[in-house]
Image (cartoon, rainbow, N blue to C red; front, side, top):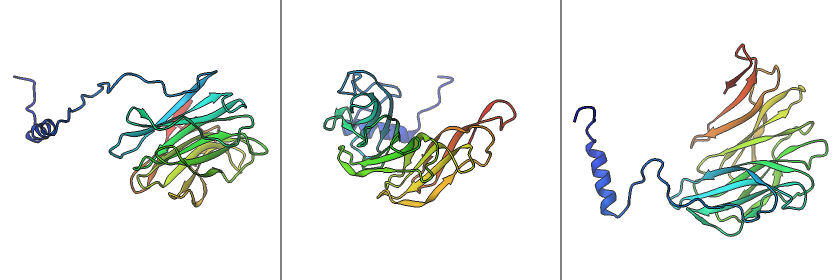
Length: 241
């Protein structure tokens, strides 16, 4: 039939193999089951969810979110790990410091399903800071929560995190640096959450407020950061990386 490309023989062989071992290939966009409620605690608001999936063969993923008054003090950060569609244990509280606001989380997983959560925390004396905590794939705590940012004057927040398959990770955030301007900053860590080098500034153009960022890593630990910058492209806001 005209207009239809022939199916490559390699694809046919792969489909035949899947049929032989009893695996049904997933059509793009096809649902693998009904929608499920992630949060168990339902009082007040649960919002700003983020999700990360591991690359292991078990289908592990984890969801993190803000929950209002669940930890007894304004917003707190909570998480629920899953094995495919099955929740692994009960939802867990990520932040151990509960005074005032702990919110705006992000999460990244390694190849084993272990994950690190970052969030904005009010426990610094002068303002918000960026904090993080690590967990196993089943939700067991790996160590205490720790501060990510070194420079603590003014607000640091809107953090994002990306992990390599081996568990090294990088955190980026928006903050006011030593120059007094909002910028995008970062800190690298090894798989045991030991800092690799010092905190660094990502953006070199510093006029105006550089808006919250995003980050992605490759398997070797190289990473790319993107953010929004005002006026740098000649008219209002633009996206830079």
